Image 1 (tube, rainbow, N blue to C red):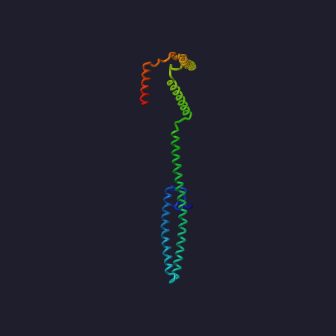
Image 2 (cartoon, one colour):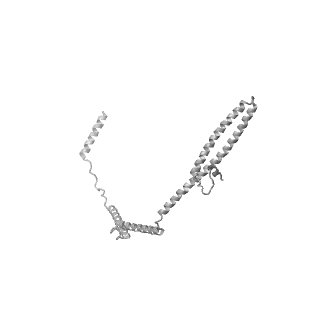
Image 3 (cartoon, rainbow, N blue to C red):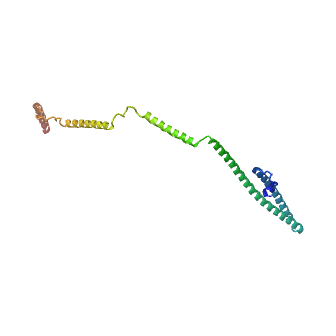
Length: 222
């Protein structure tokens, strides 16, 4: 009989129903709790026997030795329980991982079935034909948009080269006109210098000035 069967009382018969992972995990946890309580009990017994040995160490050596022997037995049992707990913990973790993997695989199986059902009515050839139709209709829609957005009757009937030549001709005419205007300003005659002399100062005014100068000289001589 396997360790699993010994722990959970399995008879090992062909007709026996194996426990579920959840049931086995629960049983292992209960066993861990039981062994933990046993550990606490043994630790208290060890402390008690140690106190007894110390108490009778000098008074009653025989009682002290018996207490130490019992302490050793309890320590041996405690060590065995520690090893058993380690084994049970390892087995419980393995079962938990196996249970997790089982649930993951189960959910993945459900997802695979759902995907299969979703694709059941789909044919790859039909999908290809549908995508080809969609692509074709998109191209038609683009061509229609291009035709609608194209200007009608504006610019298509004119030659771009002819328009550029006409523009250059107009620019040349304007340039020639400006040059003619500049040359015209150079031919305008300037005013001539007058050949006659300026009119002389009136004689009477000159005589008055000479009289004033004579008076001034006479006044200075006094």
